[in-house]
Each structure stands twice: as structure tokens, then as C-alpha cells.
Length: 323
Ligand SMILES: [Zn+2]
Ligand SMILES: [Zn+2]
Figure 1 (cartoon, protein in one colour):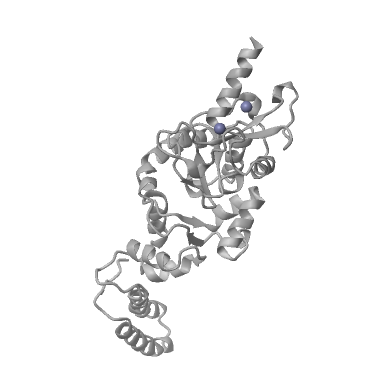
Figure 2: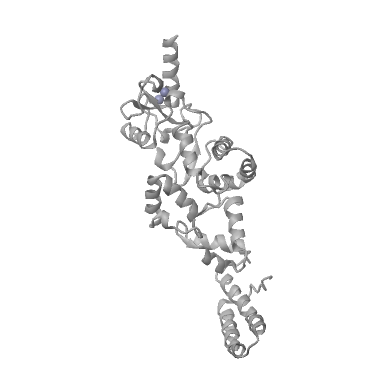
């Protein structure tokens, strides 16, 4: 049923006519004609929707989609009920508009489902989310939403076609995730994108962690060594897997090593804030002092933080030594 839009009407005018409609409805309740009652209520439904959508005031006329995002922008990093979005959108299909905003237009709108997937897999993410949102992330409902970044991520909007292409492939969730990240090296990819890629399968959070810890892909997050990143964001720093003997490092060990070394290369002191164009140093990696395959353990004591240049150098030297 199309909504009868009357954008010029003021909320108070709409409220008064809604009251009139409901007052007149008292007479309808007296008779036994079910269909008559239902039909008599329709104008009140429309009026209520008009009232809801009139609450977002602006000089331009806004579409339902515009009103949804305008409302969320009023309350960034705040848990908002889907029902609130229903009210301000003024349309029945608000959920579809919301989905377009989230996956196609690059707005970082996270749902309770995504938060739960993240929090269940990574206790540190749960703690970061609680700090940010003031609520336990696992208790946010599936139809509650949070705008995690106040402005539109235009790069994410551009990625949408790539995202959809990879999503359609008949490959495992893990393969989809790494393929998508490799197509977007150094971009901040949201948990929502990865969940969409996985066709909402909960395993996406575990798979992305396995790609980092077991397979040695440099996928960094706020709680695995890149404190500068927002929670819920994943970045593939380079399109290159770690050396085979540098894989298998659990996240808590990784974080402890970075902390001990002050998140800088122990050879040259480079850290992420010193990044400049032209400097070949662009990421930190962990190196096993005793190689993993030679029974070197994945312990804090056996690991050391190096920039990519000094890490390569050490491996070059050790390769020479073995010849
Ligand atoms: Zn270095
Ligand atoms: Zn190494």
C-alpha cells in the first residue's frame, strides 16, 4: 500500500488529525462489521506513518532512506531499535532501505548479530565494544543497530560490486574472506562486509582469526596489535603470508610481544606513526628467534617484533647461512 506522503505537514497538524481519526473510530468499534472497522482504521495508520516521518526536519525533502540515515547520524555509536527506524522511515519496507544503506552505500551500520559473532569469538572485542557502547555486545538484539562511523565510507560503497562477486563464488567462507581482503589491501573492511560475504554464517569471525593466526596473513584488528583501528574493522596490511615458520601465533601472544617491544622494530625502532611515503617500512611482523619448524615455540620469549625490512633481512641472512 503506497504511503500518502504529505511532507509539508507539520508534526502538530498531523497529530491533531490523528487524534480526530481515532476519536471518530470509537463509533466504528460499536458496530459488528469487522471489515468496516479495518477499513476505517487505514487513514489512522497512514497518518501515524506521516507523523513519524515528519519528525526528521530539514529544509530539503528527504526519502525514507535519507531519514533512516539522518536519524542514525543523530545517535552515532548508540544502540538503536529497528522499531525506531520504522517510525522515522514512515514506510513498511524500512528494513530493505536499511540493508541498502549498510551493504551498498558504505554506511557502517552494525547489527546485533554481527556484534555477537565478534564478541563470541574474541573476548577482547567484547570488552572494547562494551567500553564504546556502554552495553554488553552479546546482549544487543538482532534487530538493533549501531552506526559505528558518522560519515559515509565511500570506498566501501565502491567495493560493493567486488563484495557481491566474491560472495557468489562457490568456495569456502575462509577462501571468500581472504580473496576479498586481497582485493582490498590496506582498506578498513567492516565486520558487516565479512558477515555479508559469509552469507550470514557465524563462522566468519573465527575464519578471519584463523587466517591471521594459523595461516599467517597480516590481517590486523584493534585487539590483535593495531590499537589505532576502530573495533570491528579488519585490515590486510600486505598481500603476503608470513614466512611459514612465523605462523601459528595465537593473538594473546602476539599482543604480549608487541607490548613488550613497545610496538616497534627492535632493530631500528620503526613504529606505525613513523610511516611516510617512500619508506619501505610499512608494517610490523613477529619473528621466531628459534624457527618454529625447528621446534621454536610460539611463546613470548621466542618471538620478537621487527619491521618488514629488518624481518626480510634476517630471513635473507639465515637463508645464506644455511646454504
Ligand atoms: Zn626495522
Ligand atoms: Zn621470521
